[in-house]
Amino acid sequence: MSRGYGIIYTTLLISLVLSVLPMPESLQLYRVQWTALVLIYWCMAVPERAGVGLAFVAGLLLDILTGTLLGQHALGLSVIAYITIKTYRRVRVFPLWQQSVFVVVLLLIERMFFFWVDGAIGRPAKSAESWLAPFLGGLIWPWLFIIMRDLRRRFHSP
Image (cartoon, rainbow, N blue to C red; front, top):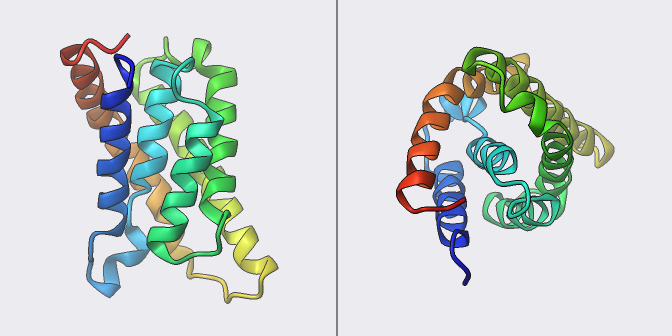
């Protein structure tokens, strides 16, 4: 494994674990999209190392771990990775609060793909409360960004 990839894979693994940790049923709709947040960070920080392929693989792993239709998360994560890579030069220079708005939009896009696939296969629609999770992700973004940036610097990832 070449230098710098270890921290990317480790943080993605941690995000996958956070995505499947047991939660009370009443809080399931508010589960933060950890894997999407971590992918957005890495696609903005080192787009040459984290891209659509990594997002697709992470999405497939998330599909397997959560028991959703194979490819459901992979589709949404791949799309937001693509958008992030296409816009990272502009977004990286934004203040954290503006980045948070961008992240909320990306998380909403990922959530829309998830609901679209659910509708296409005939699953019942989730409640409107489940749309709050992307906004929670936007609130978490500044702290996650700072933690991830410090990890990247500590482990000398470019």
